[in-house]
Image: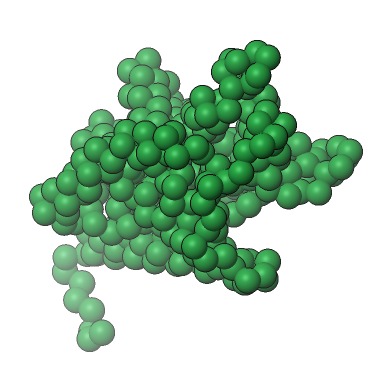
Length: 109
Length: 228
């Protein structure tokens, strides 16, 4: 991981923290999903609107929901990390085998 | 955020499904052809999908005092072209609709259209456009991913405005109401998505040169020297 990337990740982290701090200063900040706010706008525009279909299955609690979101993130991060690690290892071993002296023979592995 | 289950009237829900379907089919065909012609890029395709999985699972706090999440759809679009993302984005949305009650089956077409079609096309178009203007690659990628994310939420606001016009000010007034909830919430998150996409692209240019060379979208892009 080079310095540039660490810097970019640091800026992203700062953005999250600044958002959290600025957000919590706002009145009535509960950090619920923006979805709910939007659906509230729908209700003000059309007070009699009723959702005509409800989810087939809902996580029974916010804990279970958190579990599933965490699983989704963990699965994605796992695949992404596997891929990047694999390529990093491959490109390292490639550049090593290229720079190796032709007359030097490794004594066994 | 996606439009919740049942929150588009049946006619609108059906119309967006019909609009989105050909893009998803084309995306599936494109992905299929890609795996046959360039099987060596299969892992990178999986990694791009994985990036979208991670970003859409992380609900981040925003300056408005509410939470939303990024899309992660820009990365795959700039690597593989926008049509493949129609398929990958649909997979993510389907997962969230079925297991998390986030988004929905009736609103799947509308959500696919905004997140998996318009967002990726905007990202791809911005990448090509800014590259033609010789912008630095990192700037191009940042703008593409960030504005692709914003485009998704602008489309969502349009879709809601079309379905729920304001009794007094019509569709335009309703659009302003919806976008004023989305835009300030999404802006910092879209910037975060832009930054993280640049990080991944940097890593790919460092370690995945072979695959990037195989993908036409990246063919003219210079490698990043590995730090010594």
